[in-house]
Every structure is written in C-alpha cells, then in structure tokens.
Amino acid sequence: MLSDCIPFRKTNYFSSLICDYLDEKPELKEFYHRFPKLDSFKEQLLEKQKSFPAEHRSVLQRVLLHQYKNVPTSERTKENISLLTKDSTFTITTGHQLNLFTGPLYFLYKIISTINLTEKLKKEHPDNYFVPVYWMATEDHDFDEINYFNFKGKKIQWNHKDGGAVGNFDTEGLDKVFEIFSSEIGSGKNAEQLKTLFRSAYLEHNNLSEATRYLANELFREYGLVIIDADDRELKQLFIPYMEKELEQQVAYQNVLPKAEKLDEKGYNVQVNPREINLFYLSKGLRERIIENEGSYFVNDTEILWSRSELLKELSEFPERFSPNVMMRPLYQEVILPNLCYIGGGGELAYWLELKDYFMAVEIPFPILLLRNSVLIQTQKQAEKIKKLGVSDLELFLKQHELINRKVRQISNIDINFNPQREHLKEQFNGMYELAKKTDVTFMNAVKAQEVKQLKGLDMLEKRLLKAQRLKLRDHVKRLTSIQNELFPNQSLQERNTNFSEMYLEYGENLIPDLIKQLNPLQSGFIVLKL
Image (cartoon, rainbow, N blue to C red; front, side, top):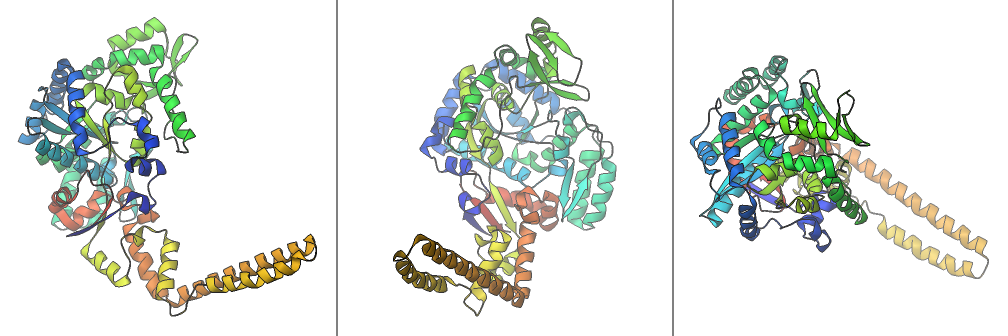
C-alpha cells in the first residue's frame, strides 16, 4: 500500500480562502480562534471545560440513550455515551446531510478524520476522553441534494414527494431504488453484503433519519462513533435562550454580516450570507423561514402569524418547532455538545470562518476548525496503468486538455514549442520599430499590428501541430483520458462523485480499516492512496 500527499493549493480544487487558512496567512487570523495543531487542543479543552454546563451533559446523554434504544450498539459506543456526563469528556464532531447510501465518498473521510483525531488526542491527553460524533443533518430540507447516489457513472435516484425536514421522510419508494441497485452490482460476497446493508438500512426502517443512523452505525460502530439527531425537544430546550436572542436582537445578522463583508473586502468569496432572522419553523411537511415585519412575525409562504409575545410563547412551549439555519446550526452544535473541534469540507469551513464574532457575542467558545481528509483511491491495476503512461499523481489533477497537451509534448518526436520562433520574430520586429521611430505614428501602429498578426499566426500553427500529434498519438491519448476519467468522474474529484459501494465491491470489509490506518487528520494535503 503506497500513498502520496499533494498540497491542496496545487490540486486547483480548493478555494484561495481554504488554502490561505491552511497556510496560516496573518490576514485570516481574526476569523478563527485556534489553528488545528495538536498543541492547540490543551487550551481549547480547558476553555470548553469551564464553560460547558453539567446539565447539558446529562440531557445529552439521556437523549442519546433514547435515540440508541433500538439500535444494535457496540460496547465502545455505549461507553462513549456513558462518558459524556464526565467533565473530562469532550467531543470531536463532523456533520453531513442524509445522503442516500452515504452519498459521495467524502462521507467516509469526514467520519474517519473525526475518529482518528479522537485517537490522537487520547494519546496526547490520557486523563481525558474524546468521543467522535456524527451530526446528522436531519432538519435539512434540500431533498434534491440527497435523493440519489452515483454508481459507476449511473445516477440512482429516489423519487419521493418533497417537503419539510428530510429526516422525517418515510422510506416509501426505496424498494425500487434497491431493485435498481441490486441489478447493477451483480453477485459475489461483497455485493451481497452491500445488498444486505442497503436492505436493512432503508427497507427495515421507517424514516430517513433512522435509516441513516443504522447505516452509519453499521459502518463505524466498532470505532465508538456516536450519532446524534439534534432535531429533539430536550436538546432544543437548551437552545431556547439563543433562539430568543435571535428573534429579538438578530444577533447572528449583527455579528456575521460584518465578518462576511471583511472576507469580501479581502478578496474571498463569501460562502453564506446571514438573514435578519436565521431560524426556520418546522411542522409536518414544512420547514420555512421566520420573517419579522414591523413587530409581527410570520412564516414564509404560509398564513402563520404571531405577535412578539405570541412567538416567544410558542418557542417556550414548543422549541422542537424551531430549526436553526446554516448560520445558527454551528452555534446549536456547540451549545449542546462539549465540543472541541469541527471537521468539515472546504465549503463548510468557509462559512464557519464568518462566525467567530457571533460566538463571542453569545459567549460560547469557538471550536477549532479542521479540514477533513481528502483522498484519491487508486487500485493496483490503475496505479500500474498510470506508471506505464508516465503520469505523476500531481499531473492527474490537471484539467484534461492540459494533461493531454503536456504529455503529447513530452512523448512527441517533434518539438511542439514555437517559443524560439516567437523570440526570433520579436527580434526582427525590434529592428522594424527602430525604423518606425524615424517616421510617423501611423507606421509605428502598422508595424505593431503586423507583429501581433504574425505572433497569432505562430500560435495557430503550434495549436495545429499539437492537434496533429494528438491524432498521431491517439492511442496514448485514449489511455490517458480513460484513466483520468476513471479517477476523476465528470472531471471532478472522485470523493465528490463516487459512492462508497464502488470501493466496497473492490475492497470489501478491509476498506474502512485500511482508510483508518492510512489517514492522518492533521496531515495537510490531498492523499493519493494506492490500495
């Protein structure tokens, strides 16, 4: 098993904001609290320990025991849940949508990064306990983002009536998805295990939240993963004071907007902009924004309307009906969990970087932000093909036309580089410019126009020669494009497209243990694994 590590910036798949954050650029220091290094966790741990109420620990444990009552739970996960009442116990958290059958591969990488970081912290701080947590995004309502998964280039989609929080969706129609999936993966030990996993998760559970919990638990329970569904009355009761402030004082808007504007001024793309009120109202089949207008509050696209006092009464009596949006969800997480670090993808960290002042305003410690592991998996067969083609791991990340042109130039028996001719042409025109200086400006412009025309002509000739050589070397080009398309489906990262089932067919039960052995959550770089 071999691996390579490529700097994120060199892959060209990560934003300048994330690359600059990883490089610890001074201009970004005001947007985060502590950088994700092993020695940063001691202070983070002490800060969280002082501020996290014992009452929250008791509620958290009680809710988790209830949520796990019908789930086959490993001894390690049971122990982790029991440890949460100790003030020496802390969580490391990642979150993810309820993607069908895990969705893209990075679902695995998020959770593996989380598990591995808890192991590192335990070695560094043996007197403390660290629990890996997967936060299910059960209150999400973007069904179109999660109702499918890709398998060997085919989109397998679940057709279901949309509306409301996705965690409450019943599993009707997933039997049709199972039939399609079963016909695609064929037979064999690994295929049968995948079929059993899908059937047990989605055909034997009543809603998407239960199905996803079962699936994630089956994949990671031996590592002590704790899965939380925060769409819970008791947990939201703990969050009432912060939701009240949001409704009355628009705290998120007041603190996040200036931070987002600062990021924009520094030339970074702003991931998410806050709303004046960053809460949704939840009921069956509904999750819509709460909007304030001249002292009255209403739910978007409904006839639900409150006065200020009526809304606060509704919140006090039915906190489960209120749902934080993307701006408030991170705060909700940090209020109910004794959390030290959030592990996410580049897009997630980009909006977390807008939130530090908001956390300071409500006096909740801002967590350490860690970019999850990113991985490109090559089979041994693929690795051998790449070696024969003379392609480096870094070159694989090039855009396809750039990769092809580079390799054609390298292997061609003709020098497809007209730079010497360009330099020679420019020298000739320098003489013409000296002559033109002795005449008038119109002749000078004519010389310039002719130079531009002839340089463009050389560009066209070089492109035609390159095209001709690509045709001559079309077998090599075909093999090159074929292997890159395998590893970068749809000209995008494997981890953002490929479902874990494709890898499980190849590696079976060794897939997750091998990834856990190979991935270091604090290693900064894109990992290329040859499994």
